[in-house]
Image 1 (cartoon, rainbow over the protein chains, first blue to last red):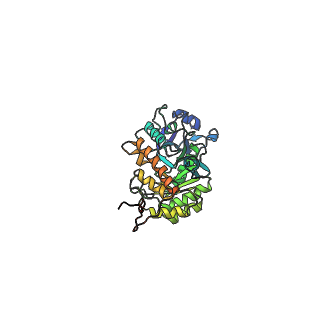
Image 2: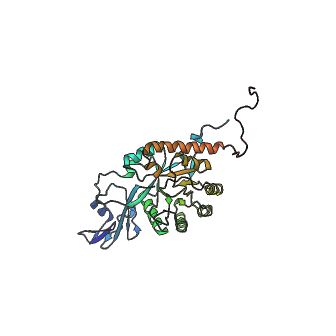
Image 3: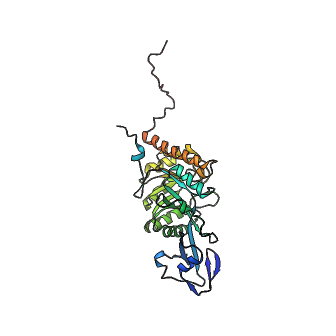
Length: 67
Length: 267
């Protein structure tokens, strides 16, 4: 399946993937982030209730320097 | 007895949170996180703004992040909506920020109207503020120095009004002290000058006018020596605040008054 992550296409062998698995694959475990699927925030306590599917648009954000 | 101990008794209260420092600092435009941290230490600021952006997916897992340099047990984060040009973008950004920061709801709303001047779009700002306040956010709001808009934002429920002194990143200083004075006079929530401060005297002027605080980024980050400027800003904020509380003498344009006795002159 193909998933859009932060504007770039990423391919996965699986047909669906949990948010947790996605975070591990992207080397982001242990980092502070928030994640959105198709415009809806996936809260951390609903990580095991939701799957990311083919064509989904994912945004993963963090904090950077700004004024 | 005169209260000389302002440092312990004079606090900035925003949405029930209490702060010793009236200097709020942005974390952008520094050369690296070490410099950011050193400047913030020198400023003794407690509130630090952060921007919300897509995570760089190519980075190495061990690469440090801004939040690791500014831990949440030492600082109050103020996530902003810099770069947002519509209410929808700003609301989306701050909801993500709240998720990122484990429910932290104190935020800085700014909705820009023009990429060249970064003037705020006050219509979109008001629209966003209404929704964010209803959604449980404590909204500190960047706005123009229009007293009517400032009052409307307060009436919506914003917890601090943050008028510009001059354009973001311009360093032009306090261009319209008269408008700021009207905003301060009318406000029942903290008024914090946000944007435009260029050097320490600008920060002092804002505080002498009666502002409750000043938020700045570029004036420190783009100084030749940011850490020294951060220290200067801390002192400027404190001296301006003390001067405001002390109550300045009346200005006398046409009648000078000698400071030394008129009697006993040697003739």
